[in-house]
Length: 113
Image 1 (spheres, helix red, strand yellow):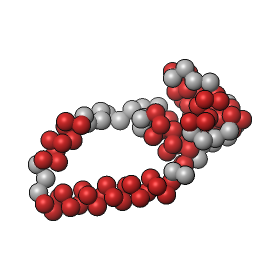
Image 2 (cartoon, one colour):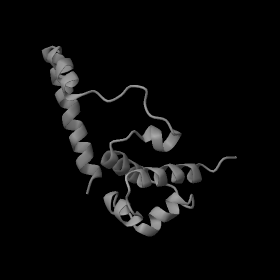
Image 3 (spheres, one colour):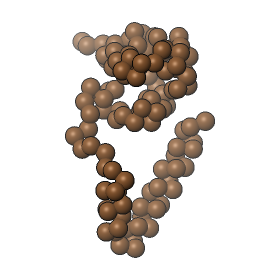
Image 4 (cartoon, helix red, strand yellow):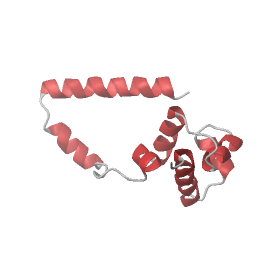
């Protein structure tokens, strides 16, 4: 059986080295200790959902890369593309979108210290 912690640890190590960050710099960005990061990178410890969320948010990557080694097939939309979609929504759809955005902001506030 493949050691999933080891595979995920290698992906996190690769992400850190791609950004030319030391363990101390990387750990500070995702709010964990250097020792814990080292244990994650070496496959000794798993990553929590909160830490995965912070890592993906800080580096603008999908959790798919960390968990499965793949990027989503749909690239992120540009601001212009998002505005184009919004401009084509009716009043009810805009209201639903606004509620979703407010809920998402509340969720981020509850997760981010």
